[in-house]
Amino acid sequence: MKDNHSFREYLQQELNRCSGVIYPVYALAIERLLIRKLSYRRIHPNPDDEFCMKEIGPNEEIISRYREVIKKARRDDLPKCFDEPLIIEKAKPDGYMILNGHHRWAAAIMMDERRIPVEIVNLTRGIDIQKILQRTRNSKRVSMDFDEVILKDPDCRAPLKKENLRTGVPALFHFLKSHDYDIWLYTARYYSMKDIRRFFRRLSVRVDGIVTGMVSHRPGIGAVRSALDSEAVTVYPRSVHIDSRSVLCIDRSQKKFMEHDLSGAAETWSKEIMDYIKVYEQNA
View 1 (spheres, rainbow, N blue to C red):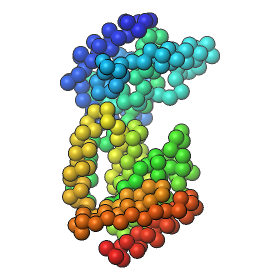
View 2 (view 1 turned 180 degrees about the vertical axis):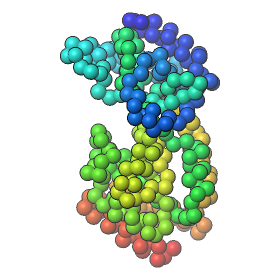
View 3 (view 1 turned 180 degrees about the horizontal axis):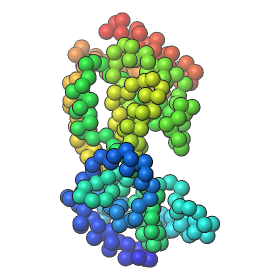
């Protein structure tokens, strides 16, 4: 399958076979740990991704660049064709569906690459959010963007390391839990929900809600947004949203909100938030 025309025919065959049939399921921990490469025949395109849309479709220039990457890897006798694996999730009735990496997948197919590096993830689903909301005994929650707020650098390559956290994050989380807040983290990246929860557990912090893969083209994102927009609002009449430079407090029962600006200083970020929430709690 050396040329773009042959690949596009194969892509269309896959889309015809998978659309309306394939759906994501959870992969076991052992499966996620052991499977690092897969044949392209076990990897399916995501029908909702712009790569698969007729009005957008594959970018031949990007595919060409990845083909050159594969050629270089072969010349240098490297053990894998790409530094970054395809991000995939397990699917029924068979195989795995691409979440990120369609152009690399296409290049590997066109270069007759037998096995492609992959990382299997389990993303948050609507049913996960419903279960969290059913278990909680609190009426308050704090929400934060994991990449933009929790991490020092949103683009860091190894985010689940203590040294990559913004200064004061563990202390802030302990403070929030002591004031009976559920902690919710959001990310557009394709992390596995359990990996983030396990990471914070090692810091002796419990994170209640973890919403991963918050992007519009992801399969099942509609159910996730629906659960957040309707059920979560009912369960948490009081909510606080924290970002790098402000704290927004919303009390739906009182129909009021308050916003507090932060200085932006990294070394005092967590303390400023704690001081403000103490005042907010006293006046609530």
